[in-house]
Length: 375
Length: 255
Image (spheres, rainbow over the protein chains, first blue to last red):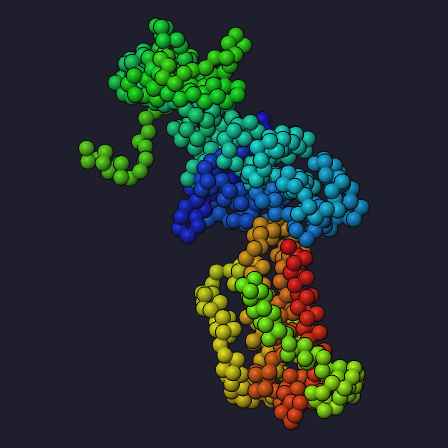
């Protein structure tokens, strides 16, 4: 069992009376790669800045390996940050940038030289030590920023959307490189991103944030396959959401009426009563598109098709107007399969892959709520 | 015809702008004693300029004053710019506005008010009163130059320095000042030039104990134009051009 390295307890933060973080608790485990994921304005960067010491919380405490660091200045925290725009010192060479932190520790010159060249070799920039930051490409600057932060061997590395300025291809490369670095160094990484794909592929655990509150904390698989609520389900990946009516509830199983199809499923963790409604979640890749003469599933027609290289994504309108997203892999037997727009099909899904969520009162916007109350 | 018109027009504009300066430079090398007749090439006026003890003294006085005024106003101005950039405080907008008031108000008004102030507090007119006056009118220019640089300053640089273990003072010394250095130098040079050629304010707040160059020239010219003044003007022109090119070079090199 891993131990908690950094603990945030009951942490709140408001700027100009606007709450950014709302009494939040979070334990970061030693050696893990944890990602703070959420849309812009969800408080993920503020949370990171609280850990780094650039902001102080209004309430609550931050402890690092048992020491209270809630009010410690940034320079007294044994953790380092990789900034979104890299924040390399423009007037210093790559060598001086990377050596800055060690110089602040007043390390002997020989040790600094050794450690800086080691870490530059690790990020494959040993030949660039004399360059100035503006003479480097974006990806190289990124690697200098990482080298500068890890050369002090921090217990915790904070990364604030470090890959957002890079192009797609380079981002993929850096994702792999960051994972490799984290394994080699054994440092705990706290990674901030708004890119759910990046979060899922890199992390040991993901924290989904919205409006300063944790929506879900779990492994990428848990977040994707068993989202805790509608927000997480919609924010992480594409989702089909169908209403399901509870036709029967037993001790272990329930019978659901989903768009007119009857399915018997395992009873979910939340309480359900006969006659009530639940949300049925199906990922596009759970959907099976069948031939129109098939006797399973629901009739509909293809209204959109999108060739994605490895998958064929389609939108299907069912007869009752429900929209279904489907994502199918190309299969060896039929590499040329495709749909015509308007082509009639039937839609089904893999039995047992449904994920159920309780119906939430949805604050879409206040006006709509007001209208609903009037009706 | 219409092809030539713009060129002729442009030539006229430039002749009008630069002819007087050219005449001044040419006549500084004129060997004739009687003003505006050409009497062959000579360095006579440069020689007599450097033999004019009062003139050389006034030149040194001016240089020292400009040096002091530029340095003091750069230090105060840079700190003011930092405060305006970094912190939010009551009266910030007013403080910023006041800078422009000093910059835009007629020099004569500034001169009279400074003189009134110095007389009121009983300050003897001389080096100190000149320095205070020059710092006053140089300050807004320095503040604005430094603030322009700071507005493009990456706020995460100080944070990165703190994150790597630098305290506030070390961060300022090793990151903040080096990054804004070009603006500090540019502000200093601007202050230096402004101080060096100021006449209006200096006329009011200088005393007999400390004579400066622009006032010395002004009093010389009043009793008739001596060719020595041409030589002095040429030297000053050379100096200003050098300073101008230096400041441009510093500013372009830094970005």
